[in-house]
Image (cartoon, rainbow, N blue to C red; front, side, top):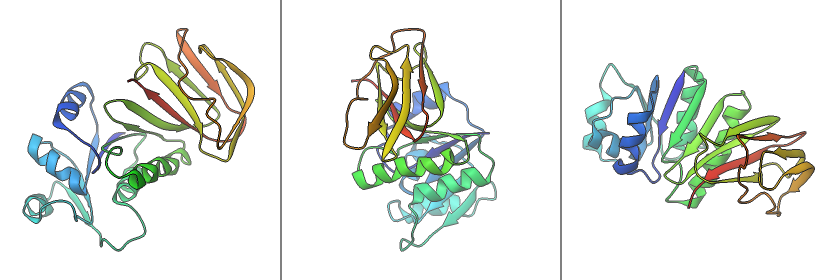
Length: 215
């Protein structure tokens, strides 16, 4: 089940509307402040979650009582971010592929938190990506292939998520690697490019943050 999470970072209708025209999702979850833009564009969605400290009570109450929307309100004094709560709902509902929009921009603490939230899906071998106007971000392990035709931008950057990542081999890239190790504090994986039809990444041990991006 393809699932979309709209969360409360940087979200503009100039980006969101074209994206929604190209993509279809079986289940859509709106998180807290993202309800503002969902309401503005008239988006139909299935679940609404958050502590609702960044959205007007008037707009929230328009959706709170609807039988067609699963509603979950939490106290602002909680251990999880609203985005983590939404991702846990997605996993509970049986998501097989999760896309998060609005997970970047704004507060850097929430951005880094959202990268860590991706691991909850990775641990269940479920694809989960953060997407904004310039970047597609995901955690990868074992092996991963990117099509040059369908890549998100020009550059592919690989940053260690775990303390070190070993046995990294890159083929089809401008800067190949063979059985390399990248540790925290190193930037060797930044701004690579795919030169062949596909860029192949294999990892022996560890987790990489894979960022496809354009200027």
